[in-house]
Amino acid sequence: MSAPQEVYADTMGEITLSGGMVRIELVSLAGGQAKDTESPKFEPRMRVVMSPDGFLRSFSAMENLVKQLVDAGLVKQKGNASPGGEAVEDSAKSPNF
Image (cartoon, one colour):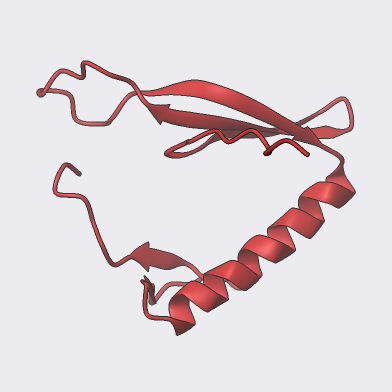
């Protein structure tokens, strides 16, 4: 059995519902950034397309992982968490942002 393909992404970009499918764009910081720009520039790396049901199962799995990260002290919960889920703040901020 071959190993699954891995793709690194810094974050998710656009998430849309189109044609009855959820499309999630994975993005990474673009190279050669000018130092005078205020916000980082991201470029697409890959798009994940899944059914709404698959998206909801994935969202539930991510919520569970966020709880584990908070419980382990790897991220801090923000004070203004939304009713639908926990807002978290990465406790290890990059000095570049």
